[in-house]
Amino acid sequence: MNWLKKGRRQFIIFGITILFAAFLIQLNQVEREGLYETEGKTFEKAKVVEIKKDNTTESEIRLEINWFPFDY
Image 1 (cartoon, rainbow, N blue to C red):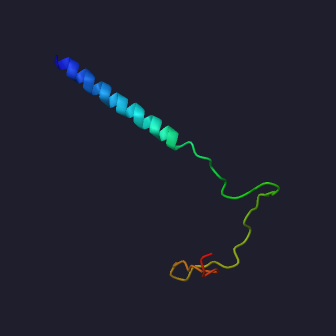
Image 2: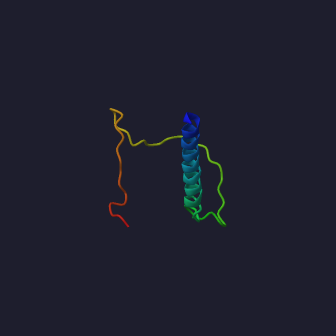
Image 3: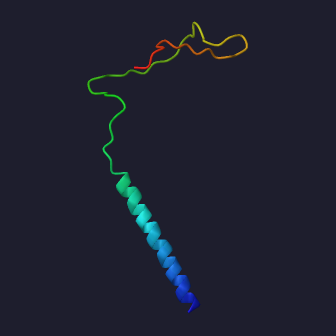
């Protein structure tokens, strides 16, 4: 009888695992939108040749410049 309880417990755990996997698969079925539109745009490879000015100070602290102070 002990093996019956163990088998039942394993069956319940297996069932819960299957239900959870089915839930995750169903939850993942959403329509995904692209971050940006690339239709009709072309991109070319570039190579950095020279850095004219960096935004670090002498003590290597990076300065953050906020060009757009307002949230749109």
